[in-house]
Image 1 (cartoon, rainbow, N blue to C red):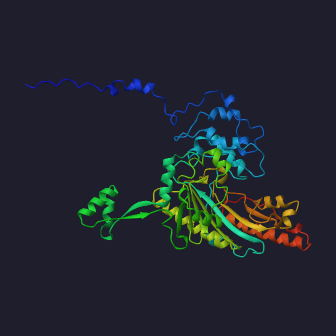
Image 2: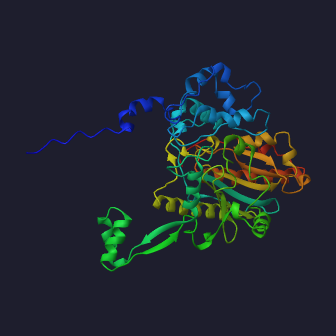
Image 3: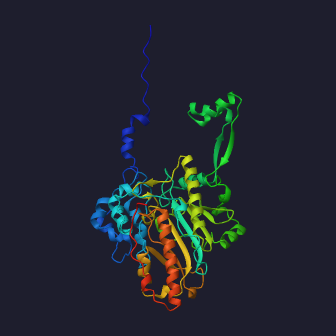
Length: 448
């Protein structure tokens, strides 16, 4: 006769699980509880703040949004902190906020949407941003007058899917991003049995299956940056492992500077654990540079001396396309949204994220009382540079827009604008009037 087994005693951890769960503090990323004081007491002092954040944020909006958080735990106070810290007057336009992840632009759209439309003049978020990385569409960029143009440069940022942005990413995420850029293990299958991969659910199953068939696979070390070849073949340098010799070499080449860490990086949290998991990659010619884990996951730059902007832009487009394809293959594509373009950390860089600039000597037109108005009509921006003697009147002229124009359109605006400014400078030097050369206001047209 069978006897019934005595019931098993329930473990205490299960028996009192519901009581323990009530005693445990809630996960701040799931249910943030930051409302220690009232919204009026927590609202920042924006009386003298000149950022675009201060123009958009109101106490009513702050009340509605301050208890929200993205799934990774990024809050409204995290978003606005860089702008709160930058309260002094600045001659340059400043957004005054950052995103901690791609979800920030959705969870806090009540704040970001009006700020984006205010900062990027003429752009409306119901439009679809267009991208065009075909350098053949750029006209007249190969012959900028080198008596005036000293350096041409094009740079942009990219953020990678499935990772928080630099203001919010953890140490582990940052290290994983660096590893993704510089090193990864890949299984290389023999050509005789490549079809069998489709029948396996994981590389481990494939490897075991191939060993049974006596077709051993090989392991290859590959990386996003090391996969670049041809003119893009280069070297990665981890900042924490830089020798004095390499440091001097990169500094002499202009890749490393004294101001690697900006105030925005400090106030936003981008510079946490510096220089852990930060690095810079450059090709052998040192005219194509990729920073890892600075303001964005990647910061790509194409640069060279002289006035051939066509070469600079062509290298920029080709290198960027190669990187995008490699990250796509690694299942970590660059983050893109139809109305925002490439999604970057700062809302001022949404769209193309591209800043194309020319270091140009403008001795006469820069002193004209309508110099600023001329640049505004051309949709360009200026800033003085300390790279050369200030008395030579050398300016850094760049595109003012990022979104609403394609990369080719922004480059065309810059090339045409630089040629006009040089021509106006020559007219003034020769004592000729320049009123007939004044440009009309350039308008946004996203349809090419």
